[in-house]
Length: 409
Length: 151
Image (cartoon, rainbow over all chains, first blue to last red; front, side):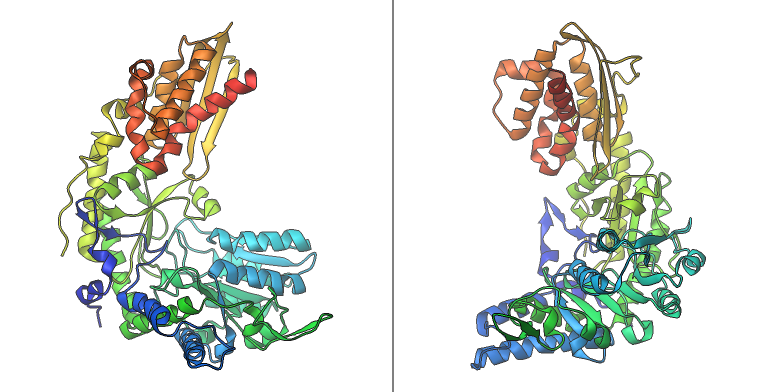
């Protein structure tokens, strides 16, 4: 089934706006997605009708808020195929999810001489927390390189993941190249050597079906704002038996069971990792975002973006002076296209396209080492979502042609 | 569903013809043999780089070389800086740096001040694009730091 894009677009109020005189063409979805009225409505409905703190009151609104908050957790669990809702910990975003594991699990389990393996395609949030853990513990950080065509070098992975490896952390879809990595195979390599795997699903969870059971991963995280949800909330999935063993990372209200002036004991999962009043409204709105995506069907979302990416790649090939980073075929590739012009700097392209109402990202995309491995310091990036159309791809290509003419006439 | 675009006419406010000319044909790019001042500056977020070399004779700039890579704004701004510097005293150069900063802040400049800036006034449109001001100021900040270090 294909997506009814006109119907979808009608759900997103922001798509009505103009940038200058031009309709908005929003192609910066890898940075953050737009929000449908259903998600905006869930936020305002909570604040308008049942705003109350969760897990403590006996009054009606507190009970309603708690039920909605916990229902959202169940929706997340179902969305990624997690059996137990208590395996879902609310965080601020994927960065906090990774930090939680690096501190709580990492500081307990990583010692000098151990190795942590990440991929060359990690976002800064998939590098720096592990780098810091390695510095704290005396462990070593190893990098699985990319191939010339922007894939992960799985042969190298087979050699880098050894008995010394304690954690493999891998991005499922590269935020720069669009490459979809075989994290299931990486997980098998990790498990064969007694290591764990953490999957960064920030760019994959919004765009393709995910099943933590099938992936057989130990941890997985993502941010709601890239998948129609609000900013300020994300998710860490962890195998319950691992989360159970891990010490709390932050301390405060809600995460305790009992407190005396001498000591404290910890609440059950997942509350042990959720100190303080949680982000109730945004959790509920994340549930609404997941409902929206589930109604569309993630297979259909994937198919829509696959078709759009295929079309976009074929149109990009018309631009002789533009180079696309990453795979140029659509096999195991998502709707993220980073590109460089042989003369025009990405910032000039970005400013020029903005004059035409076209929003793209320019810069290092929070993946400096990966972008630099292409001998550039910055690139432009267009990224698609459920509401984007072939017409918009045409406007992008036409805009790039006009930009070229403007600067190089 | 989609309308056409209204083209790139508004871009001229940012990319004045003087700027595009300096971007396409940067001035004073030949490196100096033994410069008295040799400074590099870069913006890691967008990758703009400039390399400034100066020969100082007494109190005046006797030779200048500016090169680099990056966006049209950073590179044309560096070229305008090079053109301005030749023959100026270091004190005059610092005054121009101050004027450029004030122009980017949106200060009203007097007619004399505008005359002093000359072609550099072409950068004034950048102030309407706040995210690009850093590009325009990259070389000026580097020059300011280098001259202050020397003083």
